[in-house]
Length: 225
Image (cartoon, rainbow, N blue to C red; front, side, top):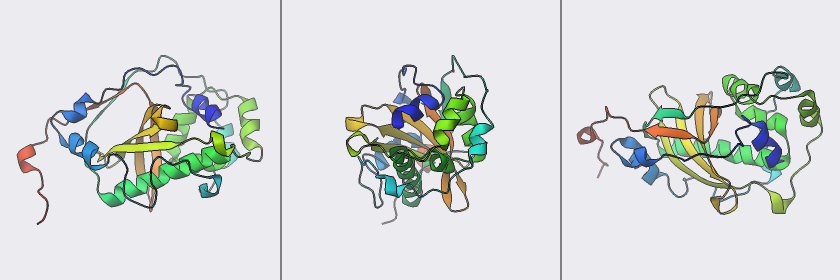
């Protein structure tokens, strides 16, 4: 169930601080990215969307991957994360990361945490789950046959914003969730593996996106007539 996962991940369900997106409106390509990807990205999905369980088709991870992080101390007093804004992503990239997020929500709504784990890179999986203080009880729950969430209670992918290609080649996006967007926002970093965009980092608030001060707006590309 989504509540289980939101408290499982990072255990950063401890109250959100202020989301600082003012930097995106300042100089730099991030502001353009915010405009180009709001309110809904291109592709077969219209947001907001509560993906049904049948869309959870991700190849599952083995339960041994979860078992490997049992006993890792729970992270506390996590600092604010800062990244530097990148260049606006093209439509194909926006569609690709959105498709991954749809699968995330489909697996949450399916109650299938082994398939949910399949949307991560190895580094992303162990970063995300290694800071949660997982217990054997959690692992036993994850290993059980999935129980889908009731349709009325399904988690909602509300919006995808500011999809940007970062200097290291990863793609950043801001994900808003919940009915009427009231479930908060997360910063998602994706790494392309073969033909899939996988989650390399999933951050709850607080996080800061800084403008790229090296960006020269006079050199920005102009649309082809």
